[in-house]
Length: 113
Length: 115
Image (cartoon, rainbow over all chains, first blue to last red):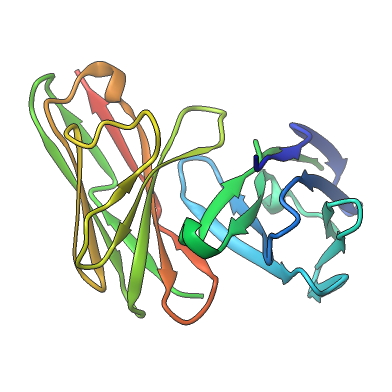
């Protein structure tokens, strides 16, 4: 079955880089996503990567995908206090699953000044 | 990115009453919308997948007669919690998938409190 795992907490100092890791099990996933959720809010799509890519960079965000190990990471450069939130990785099941997203448990990022 | 709205953002209702939550895609057409439930400090739990013009597909364990979903147009899906009970209190989030791309955009969520 499909499963997505994340570590639950990460604490960094302002200005440092943050790396949030995620593992998934479904090798047929075509897209993998990172979402950000601030308290009391919905999910904000940060970035996504297609499974035939190894890396994707978008300003302070770098996504690395190791398809062999089914490992996905999100690196946030120069982390700011405004980056404090819960970060979810997700994979999409295509075909007859109708594009259903499978989420990890979420990683709570705490940025200390 | 695309915008998805939800209404209301917060609702308090009495036990036994029904409450309707709307989810709208504002600047794109969504052939598929999803309804999630989230408990504090937990991940999102998919409740159902809603396709425009057809019946919703419910996840295992979700009562379809209790959580009524209607996807009447390409920009609107509604979730009605019928005969609400305190255990239905939760944060309900919808998402909409662009018909062209595998991108899912989430609404801001609705906090339901049943007293």
